[in-house]
Length: 70
Image 1: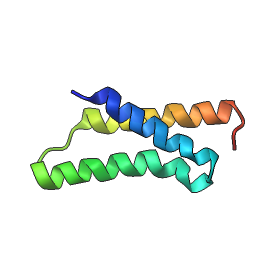
Image 2: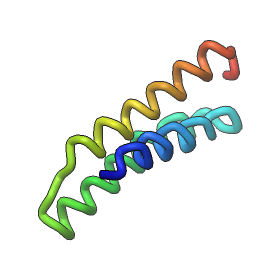
Image 3: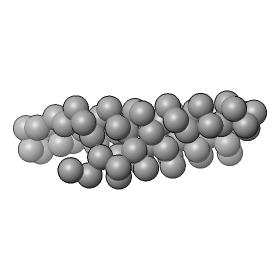
Image 4: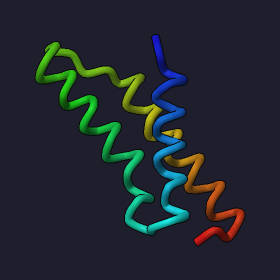
């Protein structure tokens, strides 16, 4: 499983919110699009991938909030 990769992408993409506030949602949006594409192409939805991507985005939001970055 590549759960740490989903965490990393969710975290990294959400950190782009430092530069432009709408980017705060990119981690969640990309995670959702990736899982919808997997569902369409492979008939498989991975809850692990989904939740680790969301958790990565949440950790990034917490980090940005705690640093008063936005």
